[in-house]
Image 1 (tube, one colour):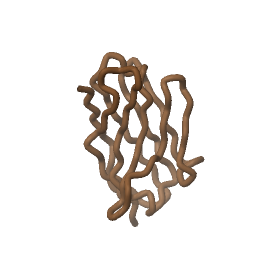
Image 2: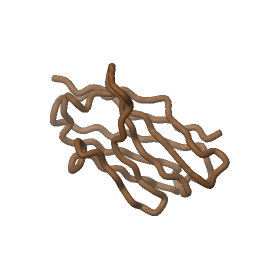
Image 3: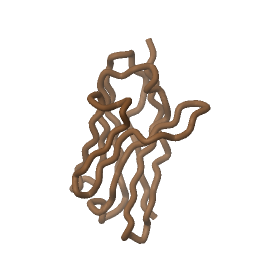
Image 4: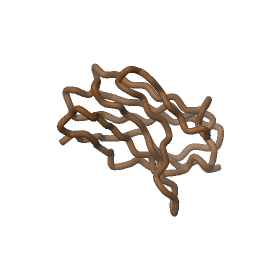
Length: 118
């Protein structure tokens, strides 16, 4: 079973930056589409950004131009660089991996809290 371990959350002031990292425990990480979702209190879990094995990215409209997703297949790592953070970005952020042709198709991280507040 693929395990995803996130790090990098915390408290930041509006306008600040945070960098989230997620390390996957699979030797075929390069085959996976990876991404980040977030869930604010009382709300559903929403897509933030995804990055396919082929390098295609997709971002939620609310984070376009502020967040950047990237991956390092040699280190089994996906990174979410978050700039110009807003209070409405406050949520638990979850790392996600999906591979339609793999034995372990889907994996989720345990979540990391991001709080944007002055």
